[in-house]
Length: 349
Picture (tube, one colour):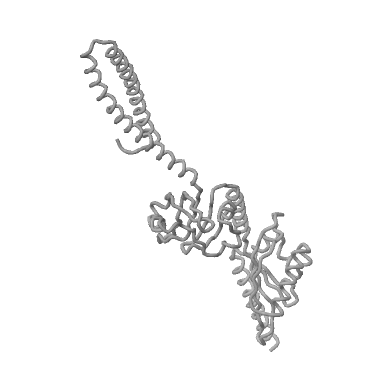
């Protein structure tokens, strides 16, 4: 009877040992570091990945607490989280910095869950470590790139802002805020519409409607009402960003005030128009003088007295002046054509 009982115990022990070995081999195949502890937060076991990650053998881990094998800061955080989990049961997740075996601190995501015995009491908990170091570094690089971009954008004198299709402002630089007399708190996260002149609104809407994935960038000019009634000309370069379905998800706009440029262009047009008018008047005046002058010369030619000779001399002087004016007119015409060709000033031929 005793031999039979001993055999059963031996077989049962062997079976349990085999199960433990199987479970150990099973968790050793999992690449993520895994461990499990009892309710006293003593390590009961771990997989090969955890050994490698911690730089410790399984024998140096099992039967010990975090205080005995890890630096104080990490051990204190782990102890605090373990106690919270044991008090509240269920699942827990948090981020931490782990003292990796390579002597570099690694960013990890810790996931834990309690397990229970047949009576429903907590028998311990299992923990899994997920290395998120690369993700954290990538996020830090993105934040640093965004910080540099914002610093660069803030230094620009151009008006720059990003916004959603519903006109919600995501970002506006200092030049934009100063120009429209707003603060970042006034516009960021809120819908803000540029005070576009009513007569230009339809053209601006058509401009944005023309943006597409093949042609996401375009330039437009329009009038804006600043401080309620001050009309200012602006030039904007707008870029639309699309998702994989071709739907606009965001806009980036860079603008500048071109009121002075528009005023210079207006004055150039007016000056050229005045030149055109003066030249036309001169041509008419030239004809109005030459035609009567030719008659006077003809009549004076019939006489032979001293007065007739003086009239002819005066007529020749006037004709010489008109010749020089003709030459000046021709030179002015060359200037007019040059301005039109190289600067776009003036109307048609």
